[in-house]
Amino acid sequence: QVQLQESGPGLVKPSQTLSLTCTVSGGSISSGSYYWSWIRQPAGKGLEWIGRIYTSGSTNYNPSLKSRVTISVDTSKNQFSLKLSSVTAADTAVYYCARGPMSGFGYWGQGTLVTVSS
Amino acid sequence: SSELTQDPAVSVALGQTVRITCQGDSLRSYYASWYQQKPGQAPVLVIYGKNNRPSGIPDRFSGSSSGNTASLTITGAQAEDEADYYCNSRDSSGNPNWVFGGGTKLTVL
Image (cartoon, rainbow over all chains, first blue to last red; front, side):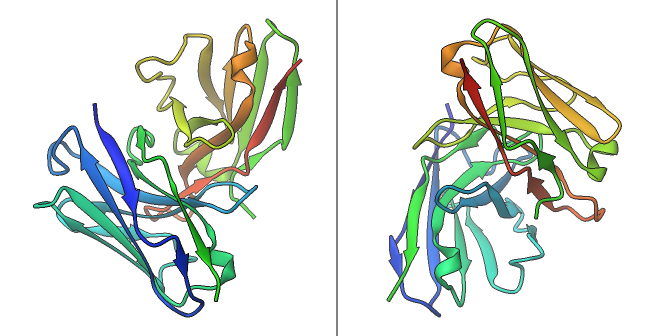
């Protein structure tokens, strides 16, 4: 059973870079033709797809965040990561990592709350 | 605003059938997937593709699509089905970007 777990700082200062890592267990991140995504959800609001990466390193980003987002993968550690630069309070959200979106986002991490505040 | 539009709230009597809809231009070309989210939990995929249920999802959940509208139907709603439901699909740009609907709060009466 594939499991995903987000990790990273829960508090980031405005204008700084948010960095999160998703560790995949229960299978190799490189096995199968899967994409791996980041999704976020501000408190009381809906879901927003941030971007995805293939194990080859190929990426696609939400156009509204593209200028600030970098997603990378480390297959040796079975991890993929998110960096979001120049954060503001509007970036405060629960951040999820997930496998997908092809055939839906079938596996999700539990989510990690990141608060942007000085 | 989302490119996928959902009704904010829907209610259903226990044991009855409810349809939750999702509208968007991209749905004329791409299937929607559907997610159930309960408070404090990560979303769970309940329907993907034409009408596919992941392992462990009860068969009372089904999906369909017509024109620019995708639907999630729960036949015989149970108390545990009370949750937020989100649709998700490609956007209409033609680029590989994904969008979510704004979500529908389902209340089981």
